[in-house]
Structure formats: structure tokens, C-alpha cells
Length: 357
Image (cartoon, rainbow, N blue to C red; front, side, top):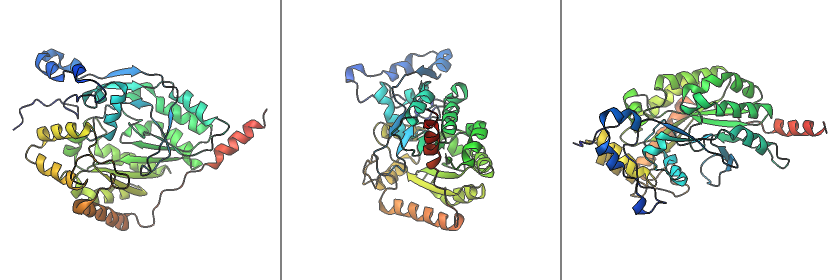
């Protein structure tokens, strides 16, 4: 049995080495674990919000299998603490660890709405859907304080520009007024991530996310208000939630979702070490089995960067998972589909504005 103490409320249980640092600059998380006093535990587990000032906010996506062309991220790092999150690796570019730093040091881009407005006002810009949360969740807990996502939605609405949203936080319902206004002109779609119907699984896998009950309620309320919802059953992790595909599909369809998608977990970069460490602490009796099954989906390794293979995997387990998702779509989503968002209104808006000069 692993005797390492579990850090409550966090997904990662350590800080991994930043690959851009020399070994001599290694962050000594083991020193902190041994020397911290009991009454300092709350301080060590607290979250810091750090302002950053990027020159641009909209990113062009070059990966051919991501399903989006442009994204924007009001925050870097994410307090949700999902231990499997691929975005953890991006925190290393900012000089931090993909582990606990990713959850505890949140970079806040307060100028994001102004940068977004400048971007979509460009004369040569032709409207294409910009997805909020291509990297980290735009409705993570920090949003309740900073409201950067809400301010950005106001920009999208002002300029009649299409926006997609990816989140697993019920906080999105705070902005129902803006979402309804955008939906009237077919300018918004929402992707809600649901990984399990088990609260026990959710708590250990995604410790600071909205409960499953709240997420299903979010799908229902958005759908009832005419906002199209796609549910991402993601990631599917063999031997942890792979048996839940059909039950999850049934429940989200009944809640009003128009479509489902899935991704098989892939543990690139530092995420492989973090996930393996977490797994041996939380599920020691199943850890090796789960890791071997993940490897079987990615050519014998936890890490997979091959376009066309990395999202849905390969091998017998991956084929079985894909078959279950296809069956779920046939059984519960027949006749449903997500609408294509409107890109013409933004061009009309710019034309009308130019006539004022």
C-alpha cells in the first residue's frame, strides 16, 4: 500500500520537473512535504492568482484533429485539478510545473476582452467560430471572481460573432442571459464535459469540478433555453469509466444534449508521471491494470501524439470503446444534430459600421 499522504482537494499529488529547466533548478517538492508544519498545510494548498499581459488572445489551431480553428483562454492553469488534463504540460511554458503548480498558480488575463475586441474588429478578419477553453476551462473557479469570460461574451454579442464554449462548470448558468441572446442568432454552442455518473469517481478524478448532478442540470437548463449542447464523454479511461458510456449517453440525451463525442485518455509529457502517481495512491489494487490498458490504446505507451490516432486510440480496447459510442449515438441521438453557427451577421455588422464613416 502506498503510504504517501493524499493532498485533499487536488488532483496532482506532486510537482513534476519542468522540462525547460536544468536539473540544478529542480523544484524540491519533496523538501516541502517533509518540512511543512501541520498548520501550514492550508497555505501550501492555497491558490494564487497571477496577472499576465499577453499581446494577443486568439490562437490559431494547426492540429488537424482538434475540431476547432481558433481558440482563446482567459486563464492558464486550472483549479479544477483534473489529474488527466493534457493542458497541464502547457504550464511549463510559463516556468511552472505541470503538477500542483497547474492547479495552484492560475494566470489571469484581465485584458482578454479588449484583446478579443481588437482581434475581431480587424478589417481582414472573416468570422469563424472562436472557442473559449481550447486549453483550460473558461468557467473554472477564478471566473467567479474575475468575470473575464462574461466580459468576453459581451464582446461576442456586441459584434454578432460566433463563439463555442467548452466547460465542466455549472457557473456557465450565471451568464444565461448572454447565452440566450447569442442563441437567438445562432451564435453560440456549448460543450459540457461529463466523465462519469459516479460522484465517487468524479471526486477523485476531477476534485474541484461541478458535481455530476449540477452538470446534468446545466445541460438541461441550457437546452431548455435553446442553447445547443454537445456533451463530451471525455476522457474515457479504460477500467475506470469505460463501462459507463451507454448510461452516460442515455442520461445526457434525456437532459437535452444534441450530440456526444469521446476521447480516449492520453498521458503525454508530465501527465503520464502525474497520473501514474495519482493512480497508485487512489486505486493501488487496479493501477497496473489500468495503465496497461491505456498503453494498449496507444501503441504500447501512455503518450501518443500521432494525428488521427491520439484522440480515439487503436487496438481492441479502443475499438470496443468506439463501437460503444457509435451504438450510443444510434440508440439515443437519432435525428439530433448540432447546428452550424452563423458567421454572416458579423460581416453584416462590420459593413453597417463602415457606412457610418
